[in-house]
Image (tube, rainbow, N blue to C red; front, side, top):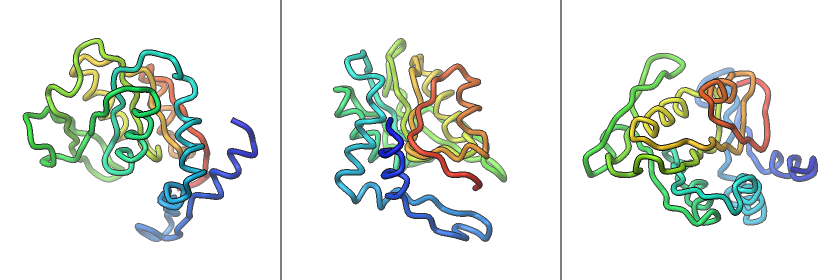
Length: 181
């Protein structure tokens, strides 16, 4: 990715200070999603390493991961799998508890969403501590998927999430970084 593209994508992300609590700067990608050129360029850049590769499914983490994941799935001609908060999927699910900054939560996937051996790319808008992505990878692996990559538009490297996912043996692709929280 060119430095110019990284600059343009970074400029298309709105920063909201003290949200959701004092001291946090929320990185809002809805402005990037609302800019057709920035959205297209971000999706194209996320999928570039897998162009022409066999990808069976793209799994998106609720909620912004659905938007990006659907676009990525379209680009790589694969199916899309939603990973949702507990109780939001209508069919039989498998669940995984994951760590939050303070406490835990659960995510779920339909039990038949991926088949053993399917190659899956995990997608979300942002990686911070990596707890949700780690839980999603464990969930996909529990179903027998091969998680070939985890892709995020935004990385908050100071929080260590991308490094945590790489330590699980999953390549990580991020497009832009913001320091701090």
